[in-house]
Length: 131
Image (cartoon, rainbow, N blue to C red; front, side, top):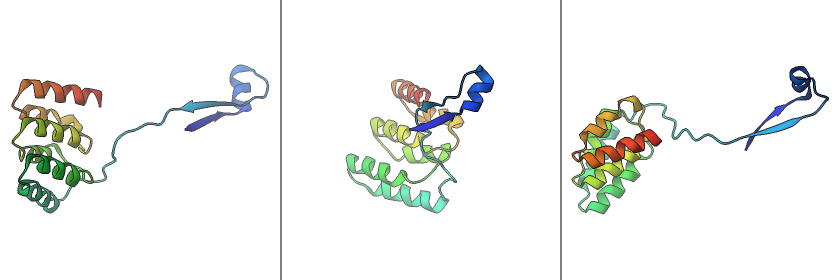
């Protein structure tokens, strides 16, 4: 844990206290992945092709989660990726996963609007609000 040392000089000036030192413990902050830049168009096409080549539902989701984890995306690119999925639960899971890899989170409600079912839109909206 990071600590912040408040030296005796600061305490003496601020509070008129005698010489002492105090540690204040600050909790770690998790801001999620830091994205330097978005994925290149060729890398995005590669990922989309690989996801699309997967035959089985579980394989398609697993491949998508693995291939997308080390890149950053803009909201329209996220929409392109989730549109590759047929099943609503897979679309929702990918949308949640990709939220943490998106550089323009203020636009992410465009992804919400892409989901066909209101219950899925509500769940993704709650997820965005809590993350």
